[in-house]
Each structure stands twice: as C-alpha cells, then as structure tokens.
Amino acid sequence: MAPITDLTLKSGFLDSIVRGKWFFMMNLQTRVRNLIRGEFLESRSVFMMNLQTRVRNLIRGEFLESRSESSIDVINTATQEVVSRIPLTTDEEFKAAVNVAKKAFPKWKNTPVTSRQRVMFKLQELIRRVMDKLTMNITTEQGKTLKDAQGDVFCGLEVVEHACGMATLQMGEYVSNVSRGIDTYSIREPLGVCAGICPFNFPAMIPLMV
Image (cartoon, rainbow, N blue to C red; front, top):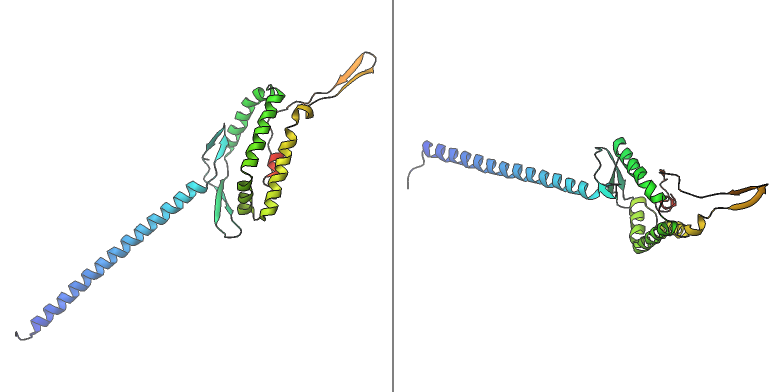
C-alpha cells in the first residue's frame, strides 16, 4: 500500500474540488435550463390563453382580431380567473364597422318585410338552440345565478319573438278626409345605423332589444 503523502492529499483535495465544481456547474446548468424552459412554457401558456380568450370584433360578417393593444379582463367572480379579454377597439375599427353597416343598410331597407321577418325567426331559433350555453356564459362572466341568467336570456328571446311580428307591427296608419280633400297616413320604416350602449346588468336582454 502506497504511503499517504502531502502530494496525495493535495491531489485528492484538488480532485474533489474539480468534481465539486463540475457537479455544481452541471446542477447550475440544469437549473438554468429548467428555468428557461419553465419561463418559455409559461410564456407560451399565457400566449395561448390570450389567443383563446381575446374577443374578436365582428365586422363585415367576419370575426377580426382588434389592432388595439389595450384590453379589459372579464373575471369569473367565483374563481377570479380571466374568462376573456375585451379589446378597447380603436377609432378606425369602430368607423369601419359603422361604414360597413351604412353600406349594407340600403339593401336591408329595401328587403321585403316578410323576408326580414324570416331573419328574425332564424335568430329566435338560434337563441333557443344555444340558450343553455348563453345562460352559463352570463353566470360565468357576470356572476348571476343560473336562474337569473336564464331569465335574462328568456326576456331577450321574448323581444325577438315580438319582432317576428314585424309584418303587422310595421303597419302604418291612414285617416281619410281629415280636412277637405286631405288624407293623412304614416309609414314605419328603418332610419339607419344605430349604436347601442348597454349596461352590465342585462347582458342578453338589452342588446337583443337594440
């Protein structure tokens, strides 16, 4: 057995230091790699969540991403989770929506009332089809009970059902001989594009009224 000398001790000590530094560096590299990977996954998760929850604008019959960098978070009051993000639509996007509606208005105005009536019947059918989903969305986004949210949707549905009777609702009035040789009549007709500013407490009923 070789005698233990100062050189042997020094070599063993240096070897231990080298091994220790090597393990430390490997551990450090692993930690950094995991940290970077974790941050990447977290960033990707946030990015994907933004894609999934960010509400798009409906313009010209298409859902379009807003160019606005600002948004408002819609919070689930029960879980405090972000349900969706509402972009603060830019002035240009708002004007684009109005201009598209203005261009479509003459054709809609000249569409026979019975054809417009069929559109309302179709809307009524669609609301009934997704009524449970609309109810759940209102509860999630606003905090209403399911019963209250269902009542909100149902009241909006009643408004649509009332509008389905537009063939008679749009009938004007006629009075003959109100004065010598004078008859009067009134006509109900669409006036143009309108904007609705709806409060938070009835997110289904009031927009459907508009």
